[in-house]
Image (cartoon, rainbow, N blue to C red; front, side):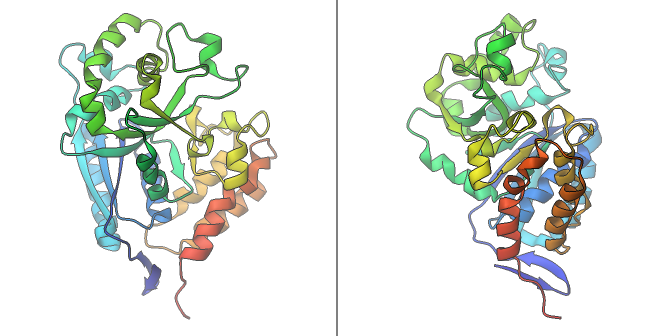
Length: 330
């Protein structure tokens, strides 16, 4: 139930919580806030964020999220964790791919009090309810410990079959920007025990760092992966050469992933338009402004193949923001 009081929009939700986690260092603070805003905006369940951040950013998160919590109450909870790597090979881990991104590989051991989480890269924007993605945990079979989307299902586009010099999942490889992690099962699998030997063996051949290590593990354990639709990890690869994700076109993009800095580098105006609308949204404000701005900025964006997927990008925001939020009587 979405209502408003004194022109501040708030949400009454059920008690089940969704756990969302990400790792952030250096310059990704604002991007991370937009990720959090988007998940809160579209959720109808309480959200609990587990944020792994460097020393510089932890206080910034605490200040901002406590302000938001005063508005949202129990709908927003969070814990802020330090970046912790094993002392042995610490510098290699810290700088593998982007700074501290490899922290995700050690999460099952770092937070033993958490059973499961939805891990997302900071350059992601929710366009649908996180709890619907969370519900896919219930579809795991007895062998599955994680869920991800394919890097691509086109051998002419997917990076792995063309360039990888290491083992990878299936025919096309996995993109780890959105990852359901059953941490209990990953601990039983002894996940963390795999990562250092793999890094040391393949460190000269893993340009995508933690994602490549994840692919190597699941190359040998394909039965441990639940495959997600491309709509849950929608990147420029799914639209820049034409429509390559029919499920997103049909049912709507669920998570927009601005990998390769697509939210910021002016190469993909449609991705920038969605990000800009979320960036301008103020927590506690009128959610309809987000939808209005998404439509406005997409209409004004330079024409592109990804822009041609406007209906897929807006399908869920239109349905959710128009139907779930109730504007105050004036």
